[in-house]
Length: 102
Image 1 (spheres, rainbow, N blue to C red):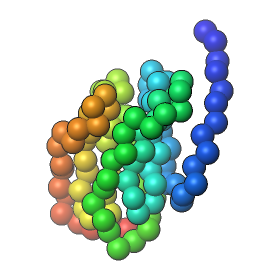
Image 2 (image 1 turned 45 degrees about the vertical axis):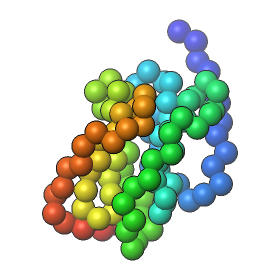
Image 3 (image 1 turned 135 degrees about the vertical axis):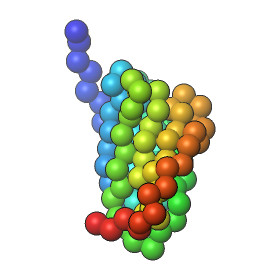
């Protein structure tokens, strides 16, 4: 197995950064904006996902699930979102009824 190291220059305040299990995608949570998903081999932006706007600039969780096919993201307004990582489509919103604080 070979190892390839690359770098990404991010010009905004970022929260959590997550690498997909297949190492092909990198998800970066941008504070007060959303999630940017990059292709690791080309560094190209695959998807820019807007999240619910909250009043707090807090880092939010982001995690690849289902073998990297789905991206799970937190929200500052009491929601958890599931996204299709290939198309960037919103799949589902899970509500837990409480505003998140950090």
